[in-house]
Image (cartoon, rainbow, N blue to C red; front, side):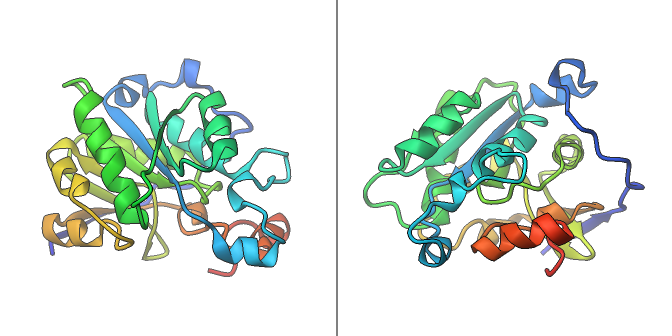
Amino acid sequence: MILTRLAARPRKPDKKMFDLATNPDSAVRTQMVGILLAAGHGRRYADAAAGQDKLVAALPDGTPVVVAAAASLQAAAARVVAVTRADNERVARLLAEAGCEVVTTGPDADGMGDSLAIAARHALRTCAPGIASCLVALGDMPWIRPETCLRIARQALDHPVVVPAWNGLRGHPVAFHRSIWPSLAALTGDVGARGVLARHGATELAVDDPGIRADVDTPADLAGARHDGPGASR
């Protein structure tokens, strides 16, 4: 596997609001399509929270987890395709209201690979020729900084696959050049894109952002983030 590493930039202070209208990287956004995978069942969270859906759980500011995840992705992609389960109308409605284009999985879909394949096939059918790459994020990862998504998107203009890394550990979102989308469209099951990464190699982008590793798996993850910050225990 080919591996290139890019150095981290010094950390800048977090912004209270990421203003897309004044974003200087708007040209980058028009060359990206975001893919948000939000079709999981979240069984561990549901088991610990009386059947509640982690994707609609509220962050301290009241924003649902999945909406926060979409907002970070929208900083780097003018168009975001969100994949949801057909029976999860609440998540689909929240994402549509947040400005995402929602597609649903079929009854036979089973895992992240199937969800990513559905999104890739949709992108291949509908994306204009000027869209160079897709940026794949997960709906249960609400703490990724918008600036991190933008940095990955910029690097994706020069590298076929870009993976962020925090403290040497890889995370999300991951960018894939359009030439690789057919490989994503052929995925099945719950393996995800690991095989695609192994075949095509990856440029590893060092970032000072623990959010690329922090997901919501149980209610304790939300409680821990309130007290110690995202990814404090990872």
